[in-house]
Length: 459
Image (cartoon, rainbow, N blue to C red):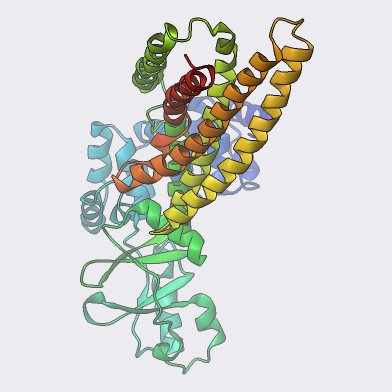
C-alpha cells in the first residue's frame, strides 16, 4: 500500500488541474506501482489520471489494473484511446481482459482489435481453461538454424518490440517445427558469423497445448525457466508461456488449495470483492456435509452407551483423543498434499511415504501414550482424592493410552493415503485436508476407544 499523502496529493493536483505535475510524480514509479496507486484513488479520479498518462506506459498500467478499474476505464475512454491501448497489449493480456469483462464490454473490445489479433484471441479462447494453451502468448521470436548471429540480431531488432519476451528464442524448421532454443546471452557472446545451429540447444523443455497449466507452472520452478515454448501434436511451436504467467498460476492454485483445505468452495474474486451471499454459498455446502457427517460420531456414542454406562469416567478423555487424532491426520495430509503438488510422490514413492508415516506414527504414538499414561496416573491416583482404586486407574490409563497409540497410527495412515487416493481418482488432493481428515478420524478414534475399553474392562 502506498502512503496516503501520495494519493491525497494526486487528488489535490487533479482538482487544481495541474496535469503536468501529476505526470512528473508518476514518472517516479513503474507501471505496476502506478496501477496500485490508481486503485487507491476514487474511481473517477483514477480514470481521469489514467487518461493523462502518456500512451507508451498506459497499456502496461492498464494490464496491471484489477478488472473493476479496467471496466471503469473502458467505459470512460474514447474508441480511439481504447484502440491505442489494445494495440499495445499482448494477446494473452487481452484474453485475460476479455475473460473478466461483461458481454457488452467484450463486444466493444473485439470491435477495436485488428483482425490478426482477433484471430489469435479466438484461438486462445478455444483451449480449455486449465490448459497450457489458454495461458500462452502467441507472440514470440523464432529463428532459423541457417541464420548467422548477425542476421539473428537484425531479426530480433526488427520484431523484438512487438513481443513480450526476448530472453529466449526458438529455432524452427519448415511449418514452425521446433528444433532448438537459445538465449539472448548465447547470441550476445557468440561472434557475428557463428551459425545459429552451432549455438542452439536441442534439449528443449517444452509443453503441449493440452497440458495442465499447474503442471506447466511447476516446470518453471524445476528447470528455472524464464519462458517455455508450447507445441501442438506435430511439435510445431504455437506460443510461449512466460514466467509471470507461471507465477500467477502458482498463486491462483495455492489460493484455491488453501480454500479447499479450509472447506470453502474456491472463488475467483478476492475476499473483499466477494459478496456476503457468495461467501455464504461457498461455505454452507461444506459446513452442511461436515455437520451431517459428524452425526456419525454421535451414532457411535449411542451404540456403545448401554455397554459403557458404568464407565462414565472415560467420557472426559474423548475430546483429547479426537483432537489428537485429528491433529495427527492433518499434519500428515498437509505434508503429503504439498509433496503431491511439487511432484515429489510418484509411483512406488507412495509406499515409501506410507512406510515412513507408519514409523513416525509409532514414535509419536508411543511418546503421546507414555506421557498420557503418566498424566492420568498422577492426576487420578495421587490427586484424585482416593476416588479411584489403583487397579482402576491403571486400567483407565491403559485404555486411553492404547487407544491413543492406535488412533495416531490410523490417523497418519489416513492422512497419507487419502490425498493420494483423491489424486489417483482425478480429484484435488486438497479436498482431503483438515476438515475431512478430522471428521473421519473422529469417528475412527471413538470406535477404537470404545472397543479397547470393552476389552480392558471386560464389558
